[in-house]
Length: 189
Length: 201
Image (tube, rainbow over all chains, first blue to last red; front, side):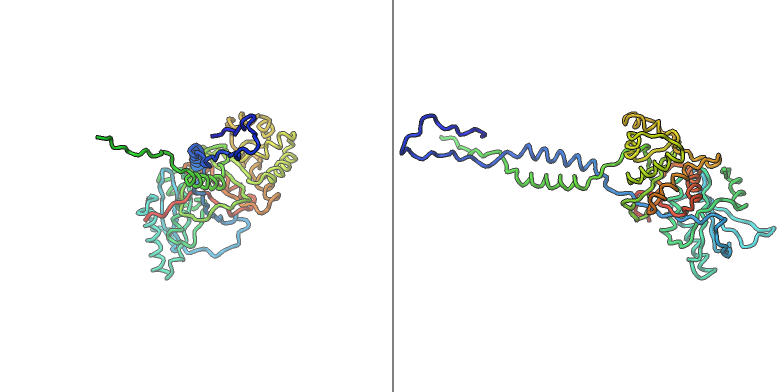
């Protein structure tokens, strides 16, 4: 294939027939090149990170000292979710006025659609019945120290899925929170 | 009886088209690949239905390992250098040009700021193998190292967005410390990094 056309020595006679260059095929064997190409493709395919991570925006309420005094929200418009260890949520609704005989029911729910989502949807319905608009619902998310990042992401996600307009991540500093933490054996600090 | 002769056919196939396709794909993958930067710690991020992609640039990234160690990273190399200047004046670090160059190339790091020079003195392989102890986030002892990092970086590049990459299993108390530090610097808005997931019905 790759031979030089060596001219025959001493064959340059006058009037001899034209020197004919040998016609060579232009076809090259591409198999090796294709092999190499696919090898590299495989490498780059495996090295590529396909799905780019997404982000979730979180807005924390400003610290106490600079907070503008807002009128307190009616407790009957709220729902409190306390995120505990071992993927548990303790959900409760505070009454507007706490009196001697007030009882608070606390639900222990999980992160599945039948747990958290059902609770939020039930609460949205209750708020709608009482106040006429389900967007009035204010969800207070209070993570206990032993809950993990996945729990927070899951809860925030659930807020988006259920279209809860108002929610906040807060410290568990309500006396009721302490009581529940104590009852369920979760550390509060 | 004469034998039936089967005409011999050449076994070679025309490879040109295949070669074209292969190299076209190759070019595509080479151009789209962005190599994963070397990370100080592996973090398994939680998934969510959030659809906002991470901004391409101007990110200040905090990573929280499952054991609570905190790591810090800036995406822009020039900002990294400026930050190092600020840190070296505040913490009285003496750094050679080599150490500065090394810092410029580090994606994420996590240790007491005062031990940075020793870390930067190591050769790159030793640095990769070094088990970093995490940033000093003890906010009670009058140390404001994380706050300083946030403040200085934002002063050097005020378009910075803050991203937090926490492992699924990182406990909230570690996460909370970082948020306290951020809020001490009046940062009330930040991004949590998650991987995409479709909402389950």
